[in-house]
Image (cartoon, rainbow, N blue to C red; front, side, top):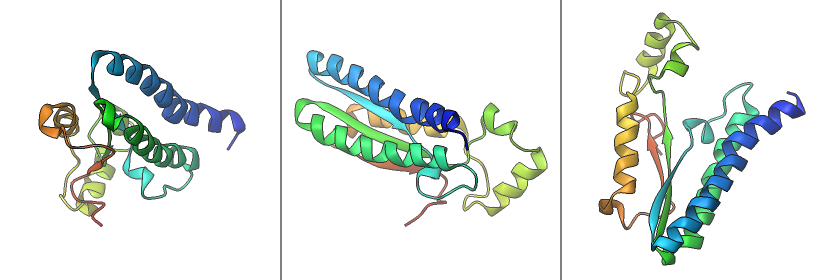
Length: 148
């Protein structure tokens, strides 16, 4: 792995998210509250061969979410993270053939890849008033693949 690759991945997945959160928190504190949902990955919990920068950046995001949530909870800002599992997106479709995706699905607890809407529904919930008591949570939306 090159230093440039490491810097690019951590810059996007960790540094960029931090500065977006920092800006959003400032605005939310001025308006009296709000909700931030960061997007991690199952790779934050399970190593993927050859993806040290990606896995490291997503694991770091979990810690960052918790620290920021601790810092803002009493001031009306909720910060949480969703960690999607195998999701049927355009980006994932180019990474393997249809046959490979079906074989992967056979190994998943739910027997299928998730649809993007399933991830979005969780994010909408975390942004809603129904989640007003949720701070610093990491929600694994993965069809049961990372059960404790």
